[in-house]
Length: 182
Image 1 (cartoon, rainbow, N blue to C red):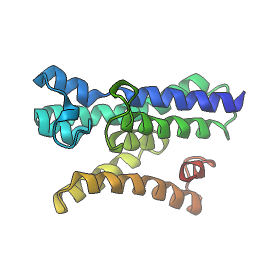
Image 2: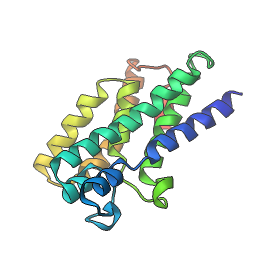
Image 3: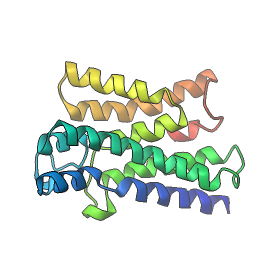
């Protein structure tokens, strides 16, 4: 039953992550297909290029939200069902698969974003300081390097490294947070 719930958590995460907010917002505001503009990605940066700052910011926050929602839904649905040592694995599965759904959306023929927003979203639900860490890193890299792709890749590396360091220092939000690194 536990393995089935963890698999279900992954499906929940994938479906949450698959909602292409940037694509929907740009289509609504500009009437164009975001996947045919700029990088072709559906995240905040390409939405900003296609429809301006308000749509880009709304997309970024929506992408963070869907990563957070995946973990919160799994916590709400299975928090009383799973053992305290197993729940983090289900939450982490939901978070990782929210990123997978964002990057390869079921609704866009497996196209999508780069995963930055959902990564920060689910990371901050597991451990809230991940939001200021992710935000500071993203803004700092954008201001110094000016490349959203480098900033996005950095977020993808910083989140697991942060969780690994916390785990090794014994400051882990969960005993099973090491699962994220796996």
